[in-house]
Length: 73
Image (cartoon, rainbow, N blue to C red; front, side, top):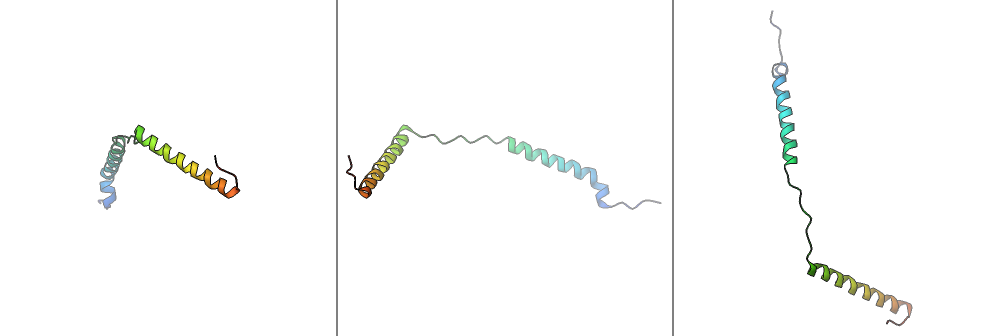
């Protein structure tokens, strides 16, 4: 008498191989991406940012001097 087999038992090995293959493809796809480089700043951008920060610092000092009653330089 032949044993009744379920769909899972008939296709188990094929499903396992397909799952492992999909996992390997996913891992290979992630490893294949090139890392993104950090954006570089030009000398003009650095100078502009430094100038803005310095102006902001001078304004804060001026405001602090006015609030405390001390004369600014």
